Image 1 (cartoon, one colour):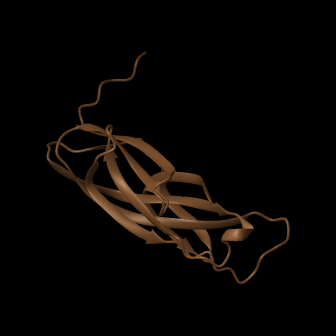
Image 2: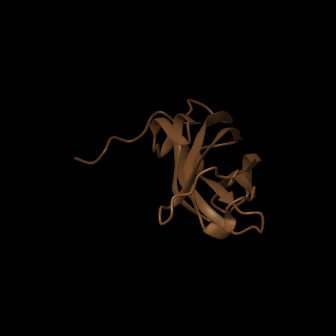
Length: 139
């Protein structure tokens, strides 16, 4: 199993086996004061190997700080790798969406991380929690 797409979004869902994303790919979130509660959707696509077909692995999703400590959110998701139809030679992809909210104590660098049941890292999407007074971009 490999996570081939992973991003943060304002909204996301899976319909008819396809990933639907609105406001996807953000790199930072802002709050005028901290501590703050942040939220969004962690969306992605897992590509599976034929030997994984028919299984339902549990994955862990967490918001972590730069040292890998969980900050305000950790949850599990179960992927259903049970497929009605498999096309010979075509990749097998399974979209997923995990809504999240996290209590963040201060502005900081974070990542939303997904790990397999054995603890191996499948994906990590870095982002920053900051204040609205971002510096102007260089000219």
